[in-house]
Length: 242
Ligand code: NAD
Image 1 (cartoon, protein in one colour):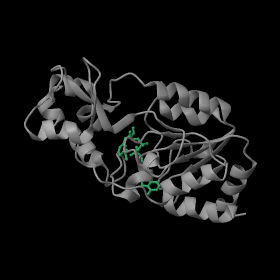
Image 2 (tube, helix red, strand yellow):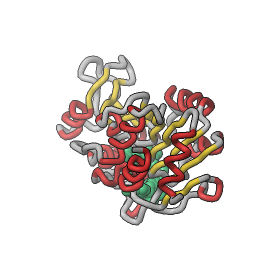
Image 3 (tube, helix red, strand yellow):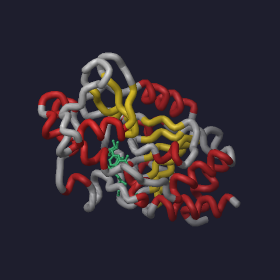
C-alpha cells in the first residue's frame, strides 16, 4: 500500500476522526503561512506584531504590522484541500475540523463543526458593549484614520475576534479538547505543530496522519506522514476512498 492508501485505510477503519488544520492548508488559496520560507516570519515576528500587548499599548504599530495579516485574508477563497475535507465529512469519515486558521475558509467551503481555536478575522467586537462588527466595517474606521477603532454606538474599543498572542484561549479550544478525547484518529494538515497549546492535541489520539510539506516534531510519532501539498494529498486520499 502506498501512503495515500494507508491514510485512506486509517480513515475508513477509524471510529471517530477529527482534522487539525493550520496555515499550510490555505497557502494554496494565496494566504502566506508563518513558518515556510515565504511565510510572514521572513518580514515580521507575529508573536509580537499580533500580540494583545502591541494592540493595546502600541496601536499605531498594530494597525501597521499585525493588522496587515488580517487584511491579506480579504477576498480569499477555499481551495481543493478545504473542499476535500467537506467531502470527507459528507462521506461520514470526518467529524470536527479543529483549525488554527483565522481565514474562515473551512466555513466558506461549507464544512460543518468547524472549531476555530485561534478565532476568526471576519469579525470583531466592541470590548464595552459587545456589539459585533464585520472586518469591512472595522477596516472602514481604520482606513478613515481611527486608530484604534472606536465603537460607533458607545465609543468603546473595537478589536478583532482573532485570538492574539497573550489572549486567553476561547471556548472552541475546550470543544477541540473534547472532540479529540472522542477521537481515535486525527489528520493534521498544513501545521508546523509548533504553536501551543494546540500542538498538544495530536498526542491524545491513537492513530495519527500528518500531511505537511515540511517535517514536523510529530513525524516520528505518526502512523502515516505525507510530505506533499495539502490539496494534492487530500485529493489522492479521496480517490483511494472511491
Ligand atoms: P505554520 O506557518 O507554523 O506552519 C505551516 C506549515 O504548513 C509549514 O510546516 C509548511 O511546511 C506547511 N505548508 C505550507 N504550505 C503547505 C501546503 N500547500 N500543503 C501542505 N503543507 C504546507 O502554521 P500553523 O502551524 O498553522 O501555526 C501558525 C499560526 O499562524 C496559527 O496560529 C494560525 O492562526 C496563524 N496563521 C493563520 C493563517 C490563516 O488563517 N490562513 C495564515 C498565517 C498564520
